[in-house]
Length: 354
Ligand code: IPM
Ligand code: MN
Image 1 (cartoon, rainbow, N blue to C red):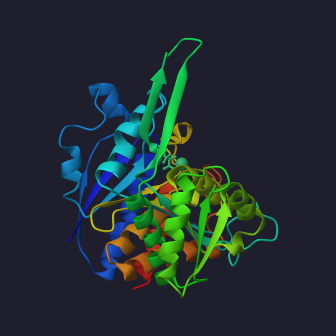
Image 2 (image 1 turned 135 degrees about the vertical axis):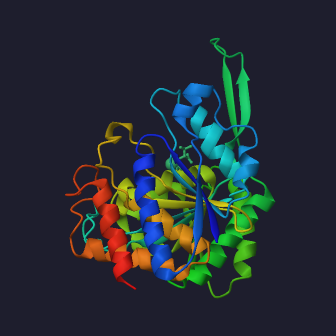
């Protein structure tokens, strides 16, 4: 019995989560496993009502679950930063979800903005460090609000944190068994402390994996090559900030936010899965948002719960729906069907694949 905490969250989060759960149920019925969900109303509305981001004890409670399925966090009436740091980053840090795993895969029939690139060219995974770097909130102001104000925001990189992330990338690459190549994405020519540590750790870990080739690319060049030669990449490992940026670019080359999923992984604890597109307030309640990213997050969650067969059923159903041209576009409002129709279609295909 898998215990799953569900945080539908803000904006279109609840709509896409509903479709994800529909598919999860179909996968459980078809592949034959049990799961139980509990709902948590964390998000902007609850913050506006109570002034609280997460209630006392929430983090300990979430740790009791095998996985968390999250819709979106972000509310137009709440100042940017409060919900992100108070809920999303808080959970990532407190549950030590030190990997942010973001597959970038172009499925058949999905419109790609890159000329002459197809599904065979775009199939990579970014392993983003998820608990350190510029995200830890280290720094502060001096003389705030005066003309002589100083703001410092430091990137924190521990040998332990960097090494466990790099090791995860190599292990993942070996299991994935595609090009057997891990690329470190950094900025060793300018960030001569942080990425010196990253590079040394990377080279040392790489020695333990003679079957995998180790490569390096500066982050700016990585952006260029994601567009020009995405086929060069298999597994990319990078720090928190660079990972945030390059995975938005990655989402675009795989067809947009409508299909981009991610996992916040603690290999020894509770992991959290989410569509990476955000709360999209302007589409809320209109049944137009694309739930495929949330459905792909369910697929990732199944794989991490050890339900590989169920995960495969979900991916096959997504590929089938796209190959048949049933979903016209990845963009909200342009799918040629509603949010719930997409969930019905995919869950129907999962059930048919018995
Ligand atoms: C993401 C998001 C978050 C991040 C924000 C909402 C804090 O952009 O998951 O990529 O920067 O990690
Ligand atoms: Mn982001």
